[in-house]
Structure formats: structure tokens, C-alpha cells
Length: 134
Image (cartoon, rainbow, N blue to C red; front, side, top):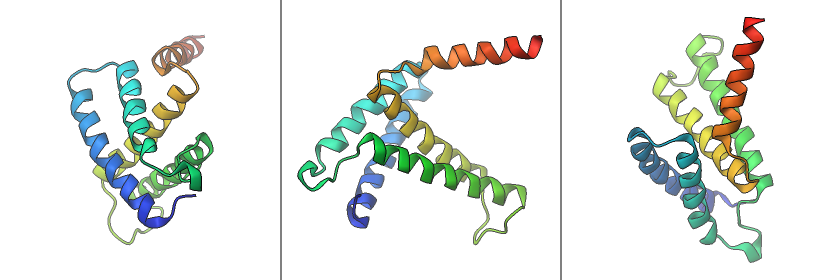
């Protein structure tokens, strides 16, 4: 696992890159393009880590981060819905950030395993629509 200072540095770098990605996505990039861009940025970050000391982001580490981010999404939603009084008020902007963190990790995992999320997502949406009509 990554030590806290390295992890904080990596997350700051990711936030910067996600901001760049958000700018590109705003310019009407496809889901496929966003996925590939996340992967490209992820690879740059991972290359700077120390594989000899186990300091790279493996798929397992990414999944644990995915679960951590999902917990953060849950905490924000609980706060927004008033189920758990937060230390500080939760906002939709916080939710957007946490959901974007999840999306980034999902894109990277999909790219690592050669999954084209755009095709899969469209199929899932189609399946939901068809199942709701019958």
C-alpha cells in the first residue's frame, strides 16, 4: 500500500489531471475518449511510483480505492439526505467530486482489462429500457 505522503501527492496529481480531463470532456469527448485519456494519465502517474517497493497502483489497489471512494459517495449522500449529521455540510459539488473520483477509477480499471465502457454502457441502458417496457 502507498504511504500517506505519497498517496496525498498522487491524489493531488490525479485531481489536477481530472480537472484537465473535465475540461476535455466538457468539449464533447466521447465516453471512449475519456476512458482512454484517464488511462493515459494513470500510466504517467504509475510510471513515477516505485514498483520495486510495491508502490504502484495495481488493479487490486485500484479496487480498494474504488471501495473507499464509494464510501465517500455514501457519506455525502447520507449528509445531503439528512440521515447522518456531517461534521461539515455536504454539497452537490462534493457529491460531483466523489462521483468523478469513482468514474476515474472505473475508467482505468476498464482500460486495464480491455473493456470498452461506452459499448457496455449503451448495452446496459438498452437492457434497462427494454426490461422496463415489458
